[in-house]
Amino acid sequence: MNNAEPVITLNRDTKKDDLIVITGAGGFIAGALTRYFHNQGFTRIRAIDKKPLPNWYQHVPGVENLCLDVSEKENAIRAVEGAVEVYNLAADMGGMGFIERFRIECLRSILINTHMVEAAYRAGAKRYFFSSSACAYNVTLQQDPHVRALKESDAYPAMAERGYGWEKLMSEMFCQEYWAERKFETHIARFHNVYGPLGTWDGGREKAPAAICRKVIEAKEAGKHEIVIWGDGTQTRSFMYIDDCVKGIDMIMHCDKLIATPINLGSNELIAINDLVSMAEEIGGIKLERKYDLGAPRGVAGRNSDNTFIKQVLGWEPNIQFRQGLAKTYVWIEQQYADRKVGKHTVEDHA
Image 1 (cartoon, rainbow, N blue to C red):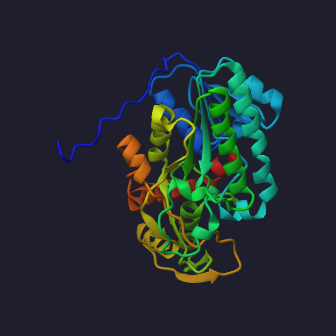
Image 2: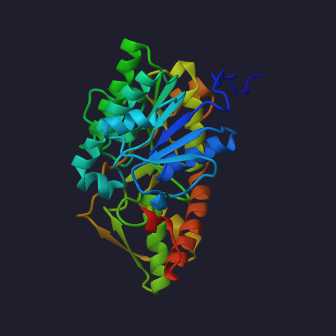
């Protein structure tokens, strides 16, 4: 029994016909979460996004879809009517280019969680999930590409990433206080760079794996064997494949040891951007001349997830290898690119 994983008891008391509400469901992660719960056999799912329904990244059969901007109080109240569990993944966000340029939009997402957690509490929901981010961590700990992995306590003393990071940290605090003061059960996961098929891959909101895959595909298509990399390529990140993300959300939401307790949800496989480019080149079967845009948004020098806590509590951590996930993502983006060329609809037409 020495090497056996600990037996983790999860509080899976949600009935298959209980109403699950998921906000941000027209986007990447929440759309995948909607499909995940549908595939688990849940029959009452309410998916919500402010985008018009034709612009949602994916549609899941049998799901109640509502177009609501839940940064408005009345819409938040409507969204959670009858809900047993609420998963709040709605936010104005994107990759580093977006969150560095549109800090006010990112900060205004605090209205979403403020209204949603209050509405869920008043509606009598049993559990509430908030999607936080590694951008909530103290940026002074992320100034070296060879950064030590960030553990949950590293969010304080607070020095979050401007705009997006501060919104996440404050919204975490709201969730913690609803438990402390009102005993409303909340759960908080700090996402570390989620990627995969059916995600944003063009247009300014995409994250590094999708952006690099697209640039390699574009270079291949154009016969122009060069690629522009934001920063000097030494910056490092960990990247979590979407399947690990939705599984982790489910486990975190249903663990009684993680009530009102922020926890890392990310891979601990540290990848330099230069190495990401090399992997995408290898998958694409091409070698490109690299040009570095040192004036472009690059974010912190390094960020990685310390998974000690999640392994201790859940006996699990995100474990899909980056090379494997990137290959699937590349193939999907390549098909999206080909579809766009011949006039077919793509995810980016809907974004």
